[in-house]
Amino acid sequence: MQVVTLCISTMMVLILLGMVVFFVLSARNLSAHMKENLTVTIMLKDTVTVNDAHRFCRDLYHRPYSRNIDYISKEQAQREQSKELGSDPSEFLGFNPFPATLEVQLKADYVNSDSLKVIASEIRKDKRVSDLAYQEDLMDKVNTNLSRISLLLLGLAVLLTFVSFSLISNTVRLSVYARRFVIHTMKLVGASWGFIRRPFLRQAVTVGLIAAVLACGVLAACIYGLYLTEPAILDIITWEVLVLTAASIVVFGIVITLLCAWLAVNKFLRMTAGELYKI
Image (cartoon, rainbow, N blue to C red; front, side, top):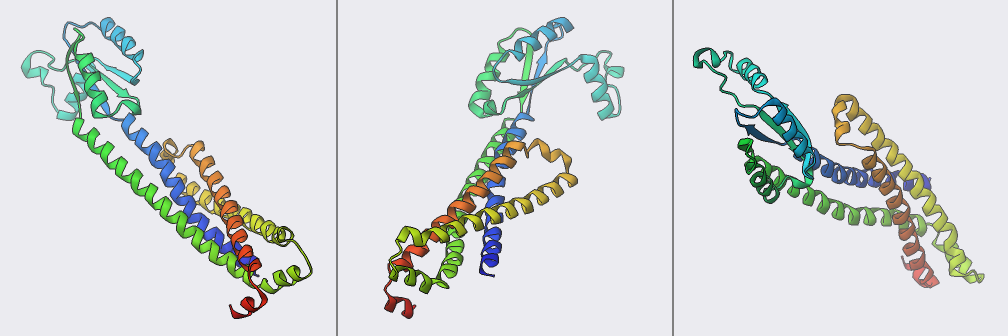
């Protein structure tokens, strides 16, 4: 019964710990996903032909910061803007006022103020470019907010690790406490400390492994339910995140229960018979 209670208690703690690890890892992917969906719009001069625009696209694709580039011709821009406005400005202007543009999505590592200024300065020097625009304030806010979230989750992970250790330690200590006189009897018959500790450590590893597997199962069911609700979540929740989360839970489960059992058994091994009766 004590083993079952210990498994359940450890499993609940590992679920919370696994959730924090999962969110920390997912926050990194969410950050990259949001950054890579921010767009730099390059407006081309009216004298730039379609072939020149495609050559410009090829040039940009070879730049280390480019992730994806979409070419929007003057005609396509006119159709899209007319649909949004509900009228065609060329009907009363007599010409198409919309320039051809390149919608450039950058790699996440380059989506910051310093990199964007260098990239924008480089692109503006090209004779085919009339102007360039990007939402600098939005990018700064995204970077600032994601940094704050990452720090918050990291702090929560550290705090929860200490709390988890404390809770599991108390549970393991109670389990060992119930067998403190068995430990003392084994000492009296000459058993070494290593021999006495061995069954407790084996039990701790077994409990930690079972609790970790159960915790992984619960989290997997929750993630699957999240996927059924929003399939696009797979853009953020990758196999790497799932594997690292599961591995973290297993490692935490085994290491924490093993360490707690080691400390608890050593505590009772150091006690005399009189001290055992007093606690």
